Length: 257
View (cartoon, rainbow, N blue to C red):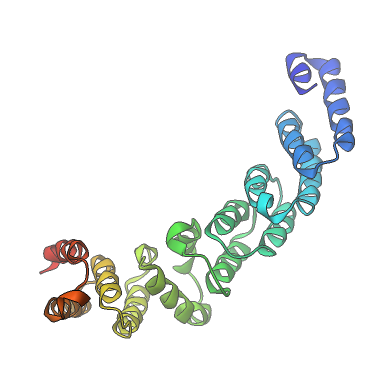
């Protein structure tokens, strides 16, 4: 029916599309119904498409969690209003935190006003069990939005942000921040890394953050990384860190020595 509607113009094509939309009611499985609705949406005018997307969002609530995210990515790319995005995000936030879920939310929030987008990104970052941001497009959104976050809100998310960066060993998110905010985050990250008991983890954290440091902070991080490296060499051979890991870290440090 869709192929026929696309192949004809005028009133006949519109009638074929209307018949196809009406036929959705006869499809029992919400996944199949949504798949067909998404194909139909490509052929409809804006008002009709928006009504159909409302239906897709309602059907998403009936889809089992395992299938909801992959389908939501496709629905999210076709949303036409902030209200639709809010409904979609509410459905996704009901699911356990994963990088895929967060990536999908990051796509959907493009329909929302800036303040709402930022609030959701912060929620994703600070919720219990948050997915690693180094594997999520949430990182890109945070880069764009943390920079102009009011001081009081920045303070509220600072500890969670530092904890996440250190846990994920990913510091690219700080690159677009002002020097003052970047310094605050990295000072705390250095302190957190020093509390890390595992030498390999400690070396990796320092090596990853060094490119984003300068001046005294860079000198400090390089020295701490070298200290951890030296500690690993004097241990009993049975406790040595994999030599390939040490070599990789050493090569990361060389440009800053």
